[in-house]
Length: 247
Image (cartoon, rainbow, N blue to C red):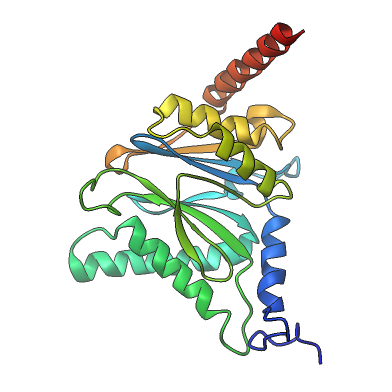
């Protein structure tokens, strides 16, 4: 029996093969890095090369859910568009019903719930995307502090201090983040760590990066290429100094 033909059938060793195939689609996507600082969260995304005549603004990997929640994804862009539109509708429905903004924890759980539903029904396939979601309202004792969440095609949702998804090097990037991450980092240090992680997989520096910072209170800032380039040059200068000192 071909256990990979039906989404709802387990293989004898306990695998849902279509879900595993969707995770492979994520691994073939662009790399996404998220780092939580003392009062901010940085999302950094690898921008793939586009056609010379294509408008770069139409290919974005970092998108707003509402005015307090931002999402970055790795995987199939078409799947992401459909899923994100559903989550945006839920965010507005929540506001209309409860007259309050949904927390990032609620939005991550809702997003993961949709992804999980598509692993348990016949006639559908899993969404081929994983996401990093950031926003405020997750902790009642710190209502204005942003937090970082991850969801995957299986419908798993979890909170992270730093995480890397997508691309063939996600595992090695995660190990890099584990070694370099420090608790309560200032915004500048969190930015530097996220960009430093992306530099492990991109060749053209700031030109192939998209950076967004969620600050305290839900303020969202998208960084210009020139600002990113300044940090990239700082990192490269530090690396050259380190190599010079070693020699």
